[in-house]
Image 1: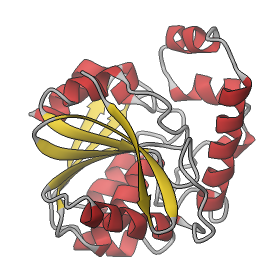
Image 2: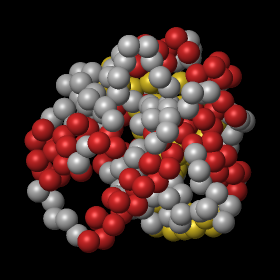
Image 3: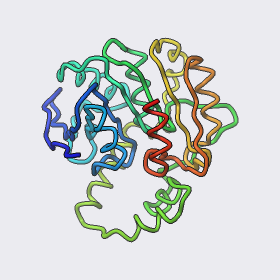
Image 4: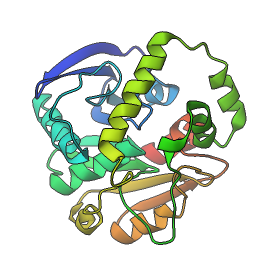
Length: 253
């Protein structure tokens, strides 16, 4: 499935967008590592949906607007994004901080959103649970924490590194710090407003997630009672990459 490669000018930010497929619109909100390429699960989704994969402001090939200070700014930006592209009844999939972003959007305005799929979302604190502080990990250690299957890690570590890829990684890390340095990777005001979400929600978690423990799913279920929770065995923080077939069955059922 071929994806177009374009830029959208919005709110003073030149935003990189890949888009492919046809059908109902599906917006994929990437995590802290960015969205440097079209992945197999995106191509499969494009067989059923009009899939939009932007790189957030401050990430990848997108601009770095001065107004970007926190996740609230990014949520308002993407609500503007849906309006500018005239997207209605949008399915949103958000991974990690992209899941946090999807929640921040939904507590504000669900008028253009059909449903959410949240993959190991950040955004809240949970009693007795301690997430991994990813800011303290090297690039290699972060990769090892992201996946349960270390063969995937070794294959990715064997890929050639270019000056361009290093620059993009540093840019992504810098923006993640802007969004989640203090307080660490959560919004202390988000949990009390999650009851405002009035659309279907699916929460997907890898049972062996070493970034955000799977028990976070229980806390989200308490805060969003209508949410379906799906736990994938033998899987880390990125089910869409590590267990794409199981992930797609959950999304598309």
